Image 1: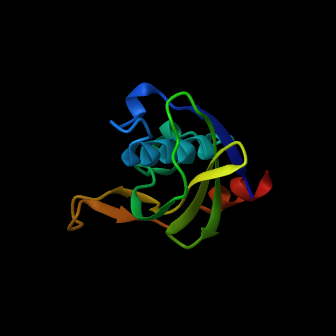
Image 2: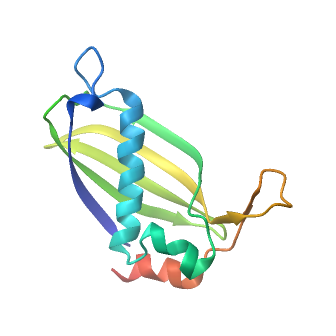
Image 3: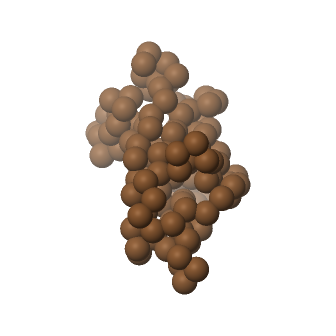
Length: 139
């Protein structure tokens, strides 16, 4: 399975009044991790529409655990990987570390989807192409 690690430096704008990363910023960083994971598999998000007719991989559900604070100037490593494939959805696991210390852990459930005016919410899930799954297994 593809396992991707990116480095993120905590900016001043990421922090709250207590000087620690404001929790929504972790979700922004995690979303970036998912995008970079797809890049590592040779599937940049900006090409998904062209290649597969999808609008991307909308987030359906998220579980997160905040283990310890991160502060302005910290250099964090975010490790992301797909841990489960289903027919139309998949799970991505993320672990963020500052050195050996775990800061944040999360799991996302995402859908392979396209726009559909006839659908009640305007979106329709599609089967994930086998070649997409294979890209994540090959590396």
